[in-house]
Image (cartoon, rainbow, N blue to C red):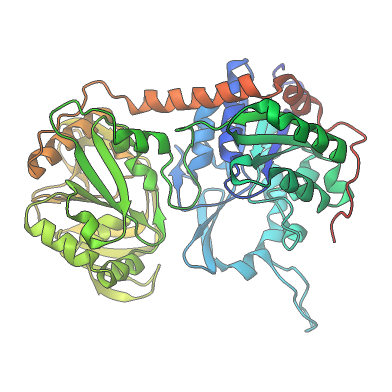
Length: 532
């Protein structure tokens, strides 16, 4: 595939849809990006609309989904707001913060965003949701990327056959139709029912949508592929569409997840239990699974260290043998604080701090460890007492802090990213956590064995992570020694290369390249009954 600069051509494209959420769209998109860039193709990822509490800050200060940031890394390009123009950050079961082109624009209910029947009242129109106004925005962002890159690999959301939401869809078939993108549907065979899911997904789409659905990718297959081939042949006969590959089940290949209680380096977390420590002891880390937990990917770098055992917990007794307790970020600081108190976890954390046992709070977790929280923005709860473990007063500001800071901590260089409404005023303690080159305070607070910072991603800085773990082991009385050569960045690159290998070795890459370059082939058959 040749470059498009100065030719007037639009770059190629492909939409990776899925039969369900968590079918593997994010992983497959990243794998295709890594395969393409290894072929010399200038490629970018794209997701029109993402619902996730795991987000990232680009260099221009825009907030996007972490999955798109990792896909950009797979493509070896710098992530930008164009790659994820709409981000929805849930704040409850029924409402989300809407982030448009990297900046928050307000809270909105699910009905207000997606729209619904407006009834017969004068002035009301059916399906008048916010989402319906965003299709031109996302199409323009995609067009800008396609004008810059040889190819753009787009990720869908959920299922394209959500017939109740199709009227306003901007991320699946709505985007595919608007941009004339060929579509490949990914299905997770490990869950079962993949043939019915492929057929049913296609058969619930309108004839116009079906014209763009070119075929399927089977994901997470275990066993002998020859036993699967008769089903693949029957599916081809039923739908007239090809299966572009059968990707085997492989541990440790998940990139940063969008939602749910998962760790992106899931294999690293599992394997860390059995990987021998570099020193005499292991180090046990308990991550408290607070409500609306965000950016739990912060602990991935800990899980990648030999001898560090990471687990998520939600009961007080699960903190008893932990050498380090981590309070992660949360989209609902006050709600998470109340939950900690209701479950007895707050008392357990206060007790261990009094005993000089290490606690780390990150972003919302840092705010929870402070003395007071004044929140008229997120929860509108007013003044609330924190756990009182750090001499910090937190006030929620209307404007969200979005930054990519760089500094030092424990004598080592460190960088991270900030995403928060809470502004922390440090009133004492043993000093800041993060400092500048000149020693000035940049962020965070330390008091005894309790540590707090707003910086996400700081533990990915290898030297700082090792220095922090040495300090934690000392405070916990463990003979743990961090390995001197663990590189989180190298591990991530290895992971992304394995994703590229999956595509290169188990997918029909020639056929995928034809789709990307030429679009959907003409004459794909219609599968009844079609959209209602």
